[in-house]
Length: 207
Image (cartoon, rainbow, N blue to C red):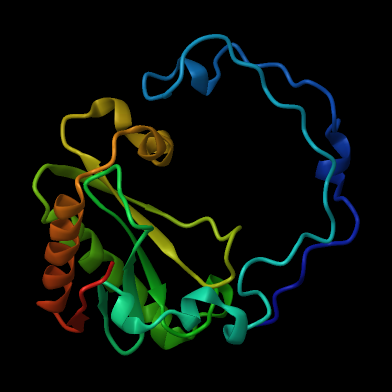
């Protein structure tokens, strides 16, 4: 499947927007949600003019320049012949934040049928592995794809009982909470890797 590049001219949707103008904050905005992390007076940033064509994402030119493809599989928490699960960064502010990625250089639109068939069951396995940690109520699975061309799914563990962390803003809360002790983070990674390896693949040490 050939995926078109971003256009060179603004679409009708973008042309209707007024770049540079201050947008009003709606009366029923997300700022009133109990899960919203901030308080006080808020202002919406003005929309910036469109940048077209869009800048290339990391790894857009191919596997030779892709950070994921160049990362040794032994640095993953877990891997099999076609997939890997990695820690995100070297600290965590939730019980776990991990990333599931194919080992081949694919995005979602060109993921081979064989890998696509594995994706659903593997996401289930990864969620079960994260939920095997103590005190995890839910696992949020997110895919944006704006920063890197190599397909990746974020799995974020939502702590049980912290109802304020439910839903949309969990990635924002993850930026605000205190960091886990290193040994607690590493033990969570070991448990997740072992849980996945129990159903196939290999657990690695990881960061």
